[in-house]
Length: 415
Length: 218
Image (cartoon, rainbow over all chains, first blue to last red; front, side, top):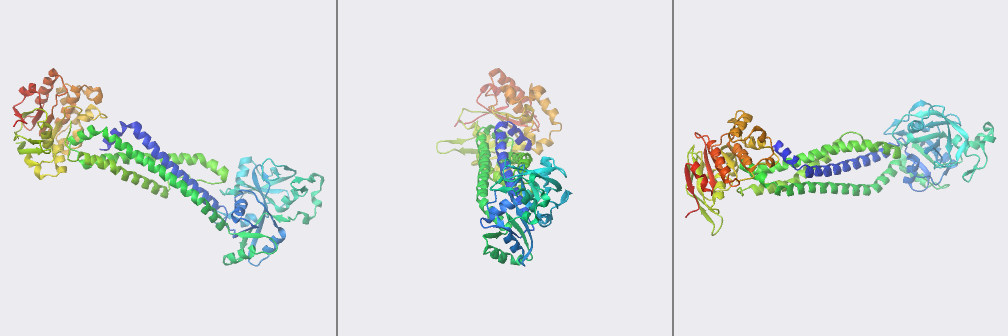
């Protein structure tokens, strides 16, 4: 029976082949898109942990989280250091880590912060940042780089680098002061891998001679040792990561910050901001998914149509099998068996296709968005999806199978 | 007695009622059923094969009455005890001659049990019918009509089913090929256990048969 089905399908190789291609391509599309969506979501959700609140200028909380944590977009406003210090003194605050953003190094974001950053900021649940080589910065001219920065630019400890002003790679170079790599972080699979960290004071220093976005005085003419400490104390920062003593006061504290009288600031819970993001992209997601399922439905209809139109050309075959004593139910099974073989072949090639596709785009996604896509053959939920598709195909094939059954029942051999 | 029918009738609707003579066929008998077109030859073949339900009358094959059997049991009987040869297009196009020839065994344990060395029996039968083993390897579209009909004979004969039914098996052959084919067909019957019924409108084949039954004459 199986061999008969195989031989029969081999005789219709082109049609069967095209149906398999359509089916497997649509399944592969569905699975790949799902994997990308999943990877994006978990990538974002895993990027930051251990931080209770992100404090920034008043505005969209989502925007604040996107540019501070994910380096997407540009910061618009800063908050004053006076406010930051005041908030940090609040009895509910356990720790605070300010960050100032704005510059880049060869396209990688420069984050100026305190060395506490590496102790406080966690990722992927509760994993701490670890130095693969070296240690944190302790001098003005020291820099810590993420693993991808080190790999992409071939940097090692003690490499001297310059920072470019602004977020564009082609901005003006801070060529009057160089930083030495003092630490390289271990890979995290988060935007941290693509970041360059300097101290707040070092960052302040390279902007010392700047007015309105361009250099007025070069540092080359200055003896850096003579600059008074308080001149290097930043007057503003982009945002502050906060840890609270107790999660219970989270909402109360957030309200208090949002009502801060001296400056327009706000505090966001990173998870809440991300949930806002997911609800925004959720609609697009589901439209995409709906389209995908439509394509799969069309492929299944294609398979059933091919089987049905094929039946007319196979009356001889069916008559001969009837003459050999094959019962109508068994003839129907033969047709079902063919669709089972077609759909299983399609599933297998879809799995291989997904594997190749994800391998192909994983590098691209990693570089572009820091997203790590799942590279397994088949996950349990994907197996579920494929099974639903196969069962649907099988259900739809009951139509041609039923046709064969009805045609062969109570009908003689007509010549 | 291999086959016995009594008072078989078939009604396709008003003005098209068919009535068949009673048949009694013993082992070794070769019977020609002769009748003009429209006389109901094909209907009779379908009734005897068990693919068309009996409306009135009865059929007994090897002592079992078709009237008592369900359609699926009739399919079983056909697989195990009846070999059928059509007038043309007997073969499945995507299988080789050999694969077509042994296809019947795939659907009947009983017939498979009666065939010890399938390849050997098939080639021997093929030789008797003038088919070289190489010819059997070819696809149906590479075989002449006469060769296709001989492959169909092998398929009907393998596993020694008790009743061979042939529906106009020579219709596609020219007169000289017809005689040769009919003589080969009738000589491949195992006279102790098998019987053959050939439906035809060709009087030339009559000399090879023990009895001639005319149908459709009332």
